Image (cartoon, rainbow, N blue to C red; front, top):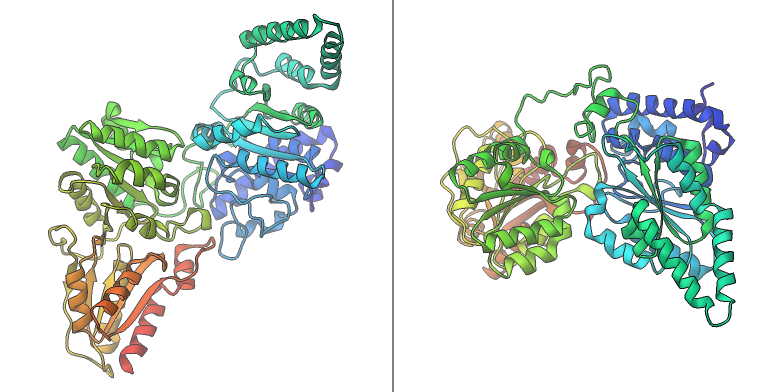
Length: 631
């Protein structure tokens, strides 16, 4: 029996002997590589924290103690060690195990995460709740060095310094190499600095000095100042120390036994402690160590070669955007590109290589990215900010206050708009229609296909005066419409084809208004009507979801017996909701069907499965509309 086979429920790792821990780490890595190569998922980040997670499980008791992972894409080992090994075959599959911590999935998942820089805030909240309740559970947050660029971290650290009880923060620093001060001496000094003998001695000396009449207080302050001055020269982590937070490290994040001792001592201090560990992203899988960015998040792949199993010969919307961005950059030197630690994911990398001085990666700091862009726009540049839709939610205030209220020409490009798939509810880009359309002066475009995305970027850069956003989906760019779209005109929709005479058994005429990614679905619905009912509905590509083509919409509502709106957005704040308002205000009584995301959250699963779940697949739409037209 393997060591991993002996771990079937929380805390089983405590029965594993120290000499067996390296072998267990190897087994966990082989298990992760084998399973993620079949299901897809976040590989490199999980391989890097195997020993770190093991050490925490050696000193914490679950589900009573609380472990919060920042972002959460590094929680696979935690799931393994809490008895979920048998669920990995359906990792990120519909109805299966999430790739992120989920409280609904296990009592051992203390906090739902998916976005960065939130863990310390959550941990402090749990610590304060624990103190109010008078309980004694251990609380720990694990945060990566990349997440430390998020401003929310420093807001949390400001409060952490005021916490009077225990809260352990693990700073997982996974740069590509281990720095020179990691090793035996550093680990020994770290253990000594937070160990019980050292702290007992320190407290005893301070107490003795304070008891000396008249001069004791001054002597104690002098000793502390001298100690802090010397420490500032030789001990890293001064930003934490200056805030009154005990800093330890850096230590080797792949030595379970050393980390176990240090974490135990840190918890025993019963005060805020930051332990800085150095890890290697992708550890144990040479391809992931060499290409950690590629193996950060992958689909199914061949573990021998690292090559993806899915055919990637077709252009994605990200590929189209990448080429279009370089094109507009070549034509206009005022164009600059901004990304928040996602140059590769958003397609900005090509622009970065072509125009390195005009490309800015600000780290995981979406709020800063938007206001930084506003500052450049004030001085005459045209910033293109490329961010995933779900991450731009974090910068709503900056979009409103710094960009829109000043009517600045900033171009926001939202990748992963709509249903994203396997990453689940925290990554769904289904709320962008609602939050973008609420912003004053914001123009919002949604392309029907790859060519229209390229046209819209050119239009947004050179033909729009003020803030503009383009939102487009993840994955393959649609190419089914052979004809090039009509010229873009502000706020005007595109009619792709006109109705024919009603066909087999149909009593009503139909127009379909499709938004962005749903044009492809609408074309398939139209083709189904032609093949099975002998009737071709009118198809309208909305193009602009703000401003809406009110004249075209009102005329369509009056001319057709039934109008359907198809969009990959939540109902509240949707385009369909406004079109329903237009119908009421115009006094039109046509039959209206709105196909959208009716649930407020969408779980993980394939895009096809989730669209079927929400009634946004071709079969569901066709059946409902066919029945409507036959009545």
